[in-house]
Image (cartoon, rainbow, N blue to C red; front, side, top):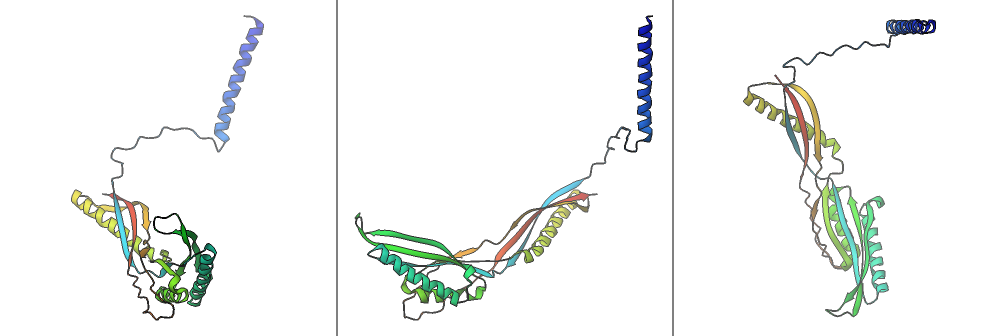
Length: 255
């Protein structure tokens, strides 16, 4: 064999042996080196038996906050006059709301408009109507009636009242009871299914909160009938109760 080719073959063999040795050395001394090992197949019957059920919890809550849509409306032969009357009545209305204990932060303008008025089917403008309304949050729900009465007394015949709604300002303090009720409801359902199937509920695998339905503000149409200078009966208010519901999905292990 050609001497040059012999040298190449021998050199290649030596390099190969060195590579093998280096690999063996790294595998022996490198603590991070891992040796792959075959993973055993899952044993027959090792699948966890489970049941998935939904649960719902519900509690009755009594609203503690009211929201009013109250305002003023004025009609005059000119737009300027109608707006001026609405502005005057609106200012008196807001002052009365604050005097009744409503915070400035709880009074927000929600509507402001001025429109021409037409006579019958005629296209001739007969006057203008201006309106200004505010949304009022009453934190002390027992003062809802007196706040409405104060607004009506201040605005007189210009008063408008779009309605009142009641709701819970903070439901987080009460929601725990609904969650407990939802879990108890889910466990009852799972136990009934398990008993019917001849198995036993042995533990919880997973809990998922599906939804929390806060009480929807209940809207009540209202109208304030007040004539300037004439006394009227206090506005009666009934808040009623509302439902706070929680829905959960629970996975139980069966034995």
